[in-house]
Length: 514
Image 1 (tube, one colour):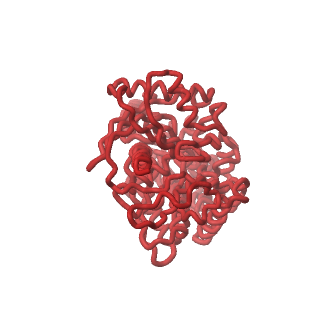
Image 2 (tube, helix red, strand yellow):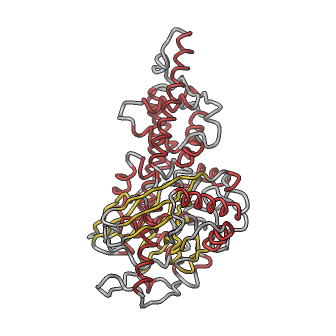
Image 3 (cartoon, rainbow, N blue to C red):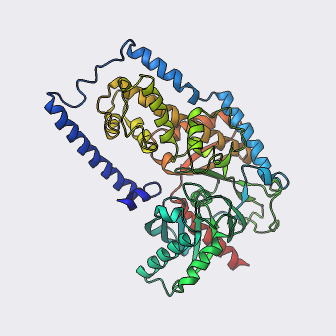
C-alpha cells in the first residue's frame, strides 16, 4: 500500500490502483454509515439534506461563503501585475550581477539541442522527484518502448544523511539491471533530478536546496552526479555512463519536442511546480559555455539554451505578497521550508488541498458549513488531499456524489446539498487561482520567446487529473499573450522518463558527431 501511495503522483498505474483503494474505502465508509443510520430508522444523509443554517437562508449562507472566498479570486489586473513581476524576476535571474540575489535562479541547463525525431537506441533513465523514484529502460526508434519499476523513498531516507539516499538509489538501480540481465551492456543514462540545481555542465549539477519534503543532510551545494557515481562505485556491480542530469521540467519539454518540433516551453504542475523555456544565448549573461556550438539541425541557426527557471521560488522576496492570503501564510509558516517556494505553495498539488482545508475549517468555525460541526479528521493538517479537489469538481452540476463520499471519509456524515455546493465553490476558487497563476507564468514565457507558434509541454498530476485545469490555463494564457502568438498546451508523455532518455540520446549523438 505504501508503494502504491508513493507512486501515485507520477505513475498512472499507481494512480489507478490508488483509486481502487479509495473506492473500496468509500464503500466501507458508506456501509458503516448505512448500518449506523439504519439503527436510527433512516438512510444515509437523507434526513440531513434538507437542513438549513439557523437564522440564515441557503442563499445568504452561499453569499457569505463567496465573500470569504473572494480573496482567492484574482482580477485580470492582478494577473497582469504577476506577469510584470515575473518578467522582472527572470531578468534578475539571467543577469550575472543580479543572479546571486535573485529568487528565480534561471539556471542554464546546457541543453542546447532539441530532439530531431531520429534518435535511436537503448537508454537507462533514473527519475527522482518526490516520494518515489523510477528506473527505466527505454528503447527509442520509430516508437518509444519502456520498461520501468517504481521504488519508494521511505521517510527516514528523505530526511536522513545524503549518502543514505544515493546508496538507496544505487541499490535499486543495481536490482533493476540485474533483473533484466543488462550487466554486460554499458548503457547511456539520463538522470532526472527534480530539485533546484545549479548546473555547471550537462553532467554536473549542484543542489541549490531541497524541496518537496526532502531534507537529506550533506547534499546541498554538492554535485549530485558525483554523489550518484560514488554510490554506484561503492557497490562495484553496475556499469553505466551518465550522459546528462536534468530536472523533470526539461525532460517534459524534450519529450514533447521529439514529435512536436515547435515546443519551446516545459511546465510541471504536480507535487511541485516549475517551468523551463528556450532562451536566446545573448540574453543569458550567466552562460559560460561555447557560443558557437552546437548548431541546430542543418539550418545553422542558434536555437539558444533551455533555461530552468525554478519559478517555484517566485515571490520569496515578497513580490507576490499582494496576492497571497492568510491561508498561504499559515501553510508557509508550518512548512518544512518557511519563506521558500512561495509560488509553488500557491499552485502545486502538495499544498492546494491544504489551502482548501483551511478555508473549509474557517467556514465551519463561522457556522457556514455542516451546521458549525467539524470532525477530528478535518481538523488534521493535510487531511484534505488535493485529489479531493479534482474529484469534487468532477461531479456534474447539481450532483454531489463524489463530494458526499469525500466528506464521509472526513467524518462529516450529516452534510447537505447546500454544504456540498459551498465546499465545491471553495475547491473551484483554489484550483482556478492555481490555474490562472500557472497560466500567467506561461503567458510571460511565450511573450519572451515571441515566436509565431509555440507548443507548451505540460505534465504533473494536477494538470493531468483536474477536470478543468487545462481549460482554465488556456483561458488565462489567451488573455495575457501578445496579439499574433498562437499556442497549444500539450500533455507531455513521461517527461521525467522518456525525456531523460532523449537528453541522453541527443548528448550521445552530439558527442559522436564531434
